[in-house]
Image 1 (cartoon, rainbow, N blue to C red):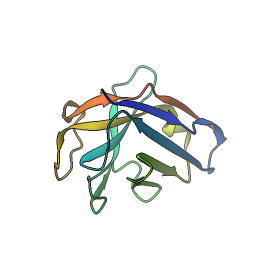
Image 2: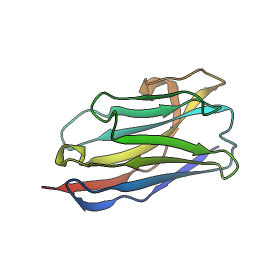
Image 3: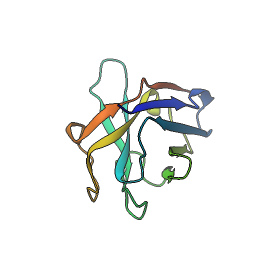
Length: 126
């Protein structure tokens, strides 16, 4: 059973930056696509970014493209989400997730991710 632990959330002013981390325990992540999703109050959980198991492929939601960067360090069993030029509409709980299939090229669908972290709150003030 894999455990995903997110950290790095907090309160930041619009235009600021945050770096989220997701540390995996109990299973190596190096053969799995990893993803970040977010859920704002009263809204559905939505895809933010994903990175393939080898790290060579990344995919972003249009709303964060050019501002967010997903990366991974398989040696540390950790995935990151660098968030720049933050906007109030980025306010949400951010979740890390691991694919439920090994060596998948990449996925952006929540149903393809089998385990999730507890989430970390990101609040962007205007």
